[in-house]
Amino acid sequence: MWSTKQAVTVAVSPPCADAEEIFPCNCYNYSTGRTYVNCDGILDESVAYRALHVGGYGMSPLASLGMTWGTISSISAGMFSMHSFEQLWFMNNHLEYIEPGTLEPLRYDLRALYLDYNHFTEPMMDQVLGFTRLFSFDITYNYIEDISSMADYTDSIPSLQTIDFTGNRITHVPPQAFKSFPNIVMLLLSKNNISYIHPDAFYNLKALEYLYWTATT
Image 1: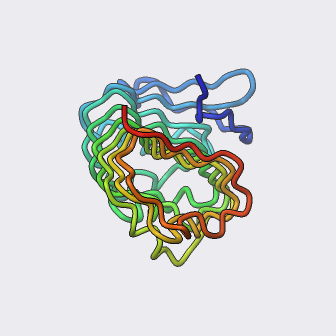
Image 2: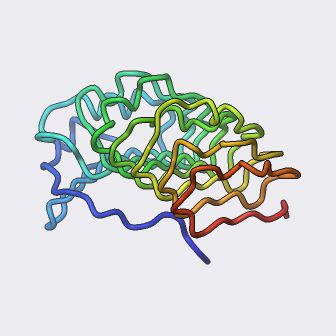
């Protein structure tokens, strides 16, 4: 099975914070120098907020933050006021909302954002416009029906190479929906409810090599 969660080469990270201070979250600093913070299974975003607002991590960016298989429904501004990350894993929660500006501290570091298996009804790509290193954006298996708002974006993400909207409820692909992502190589729209694709839907996708679109199963 083809996976869009591609390995991303990232820089060396700083050390971990004290384990007692960030419990029940965990931090791992491997021999490679990569530092990973894991807050999987949390029921409230305040748990992760507390874990990220202690000293001891050193300077940003950290390698990745995992907040998967929990029940959080929103992420508030200020979450990343102290530490930046290169990868965020928010899969399998109840996320419906990320407060505008929340991800802004990661603008120059974030490489991959995984929002799959949540409750989003909007594309959410406006949250990462202008990010200079973002490589992969995954919002599979949410409740998105309409991506028309993407045609109104006035900023771009030139570094982005993969967008995955698999398993949503998208009904049509409007004109110039992806014009802000000129270097996309892989675009996945499979398992939606798409009945119409505008002739100019893929305008400006000069680097596109893989387009996946199938009927809902």
